[in-house]
Image (cartoon, helix red, strand yellow):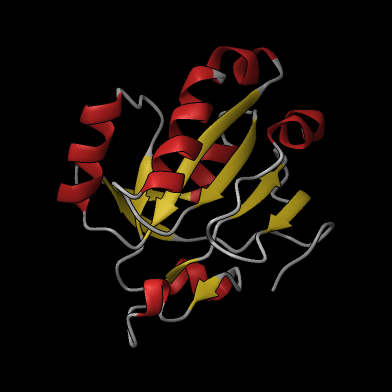
Length: 154
């Protein structure tokens, strides 16, 4: 699992509009990128987390940050999720479970469903050079991040 000071692993994932997006694209925008791994769309805690990021997005932009949500959901589910909650930041689909493996945030058997491996709830803040400057991984996927600590990392 990469840590603070390490180069963030790159990825190529579909977004909710079925366009392939990579970490390098977000880094090129010159802002710190908040990679917000979450277990699944339309689940209580994930809904709260993504809506919290939506509600503070203006503040994050003022701090030169941007959010990219990542889960194992399909693009179609991510699209419906973004529409339902008016999420304007990218939601990426790691249905092959490659990025969650690279970042070491695989949660095995979510909800007691054996074989259903998802992302654990985790936050990586990546600076413009691709270095991880903040990392938080939940002890359990039902735990929300400390949003103030994320803002401080920007």
